[in-house]
Length: 257
Image 1 (cartoon, one colour):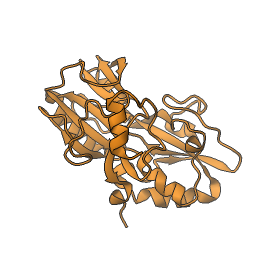
Image 2: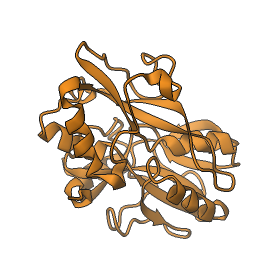
Image 3: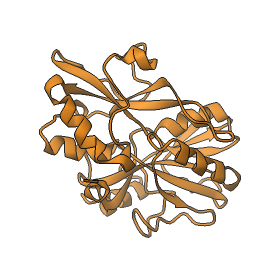
Image 4: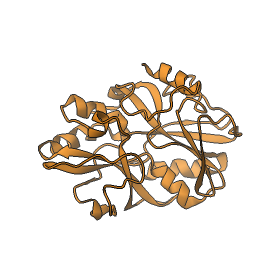
């Protein structure tokens, strides 16, 4: 299906799956949304932490329609799953945001590593979570973020096992996509970035790391959810990890030479 068809199914509550592997070739985006009084600080936070929080589009307040990533798409119902956060706790997961008043919200769409996966696969680097139809494994880390106002905390990363002889290729390929997290933030021993049990992701699904492979970690757009937990804002909204906004823009449009 194309992105418009996937978004339409999501809006009709007929698509409830992680979006990895769907609409290949098109940019996918993470969502973080807040009442407008927090928007300026969050935008500054994203600018200060571009690796995990690469800004692709800002929508609102007083509007919920995309103008850049998917013109006319309503951000309130075109993501398969949303999470509602109250005082830093995820209190509900819903299929749309029409049940809450978001008229004063500002919606931030952030780059997603799903967007560079196409380039890795095209280069012959197999990605096990796609092969096994799983959500990518994501972990909280000890990598500190630059704080701005209420927003602070540590980075979340996504992990993909990469064959040892292709690691340099994976680094070079993903470095060409700085607006969708770019090159890895860590390669190898997960304990060095505060991950104590690699077999137990904080989000998503674990996939085996086989002999001759090394775990490679990229900054992840789930980071704002970790930050919202730390900030304990009265109300915030996010996508559910792995359930992304699928845009009309091609991944190739974000590649640099």
